Length: 208
Image (cartoon, rainbow, N blue to C red; front, side, top):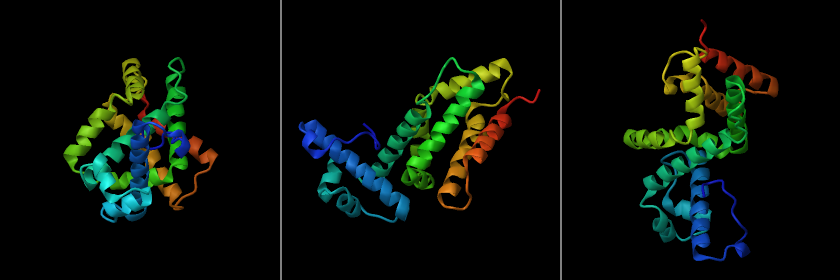
């Protein structure tokens, strides 16, 4: 179960395992909120515990320290994003339609989870070795997109660049735009969003 998984009401939580998982999720949700509001160094374990409604010592039953808490939150967020991105994935659809679907679902995820979106820049403050390991672990979660890129290169439909470059040129741009939209720096309506997704798709297409 990850950060945004369904949390049953207290009366439905009967087993010890359910109660423990419920507390862990509550702690991660509290961390996400504080990280979004106060930044990487702007909160303490005590504040996390208070917001989660648990004793400070309880946090240490699930997480070694503050950094471990943020690291596990980051991984949970990556898992959530991947799950959302492929909600309507159709392996039989055209490359463009599959790409558009991923972009649309990721945008909707950003709109539905502003705290997570605002945390994204904070996660970059984790140690480089941690980030590399987590992104390597995340590759399997985004395998359908990697397969799309591989297929596109093979057909000559996409630019012959590695996956991470294609991702940066295309889908990564949505995160930046979504964050600016969430901060009211720019306003993105449905028409503009469609235009942006189409432009990002063209940016990785093979011009030949």
